[in-house]
Image 1 (cartoon, rainbow, N blue to C red):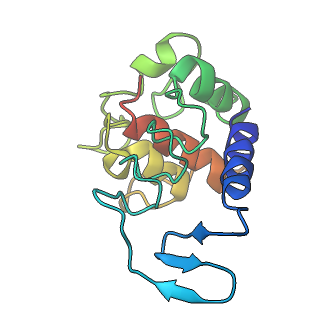
Image 2 (cartoon, helix red, strand yellow):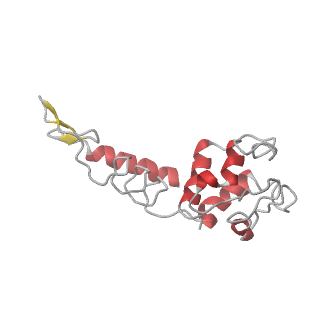
Image 3 (cartoon, helix red, strand yellow):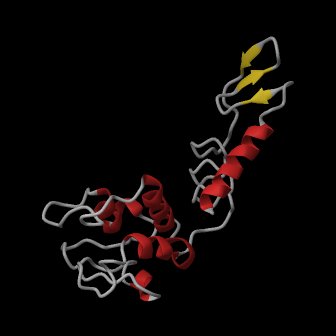
Amino acid sequence: MKLAGLLLGVLVSLAACGDDDMMETDSGTTDTGDTTTDTGDTTTGGDGDGDGDGDGDGDGDGDGDGDGDGDALTFADDIQPLLEMRCASCHTSGSSGGLNISGDGGRTNLVGAASVGCAEQTRVVANNAAGSYLIAKLEGTQPSGCGGRMPAGRAALDPAEIQLIRDWINQGAD
């Protein structure tokens, strides 16, 4: 669902740039047919991704999740299904690392919760994916002595799946 929204946003952006008479890119280059004039970047208050909405994801909708739909990610709709599919086989009773991600308690057991297996690590720090132990465990960058990459003994999550979790955390982990 999110991927379809992202692709639609890209296609709409490409279609908007299809004017043969004049096309401006993020670099400030204007194509008028026979001549090219570099007028410099005229974007003010930009966010580094060229869409000017300040969220850094490049889709122009301002929500930060990169899907182009303007909706913020939620645990129940976007994260819980992914965790149930990829992580619940070990993290349903709380016996694996003391983490139970099942049901409505999954978010409570993640956001602001201390890790059992690694001292002074918070599983999910709302608005701070880089400081969240969950991201470190999924990427295999956790501190020494804090176990291995998750999911243990199984294929790593795809970069897009990790990015979805990262985006949810950076949006406030609601």
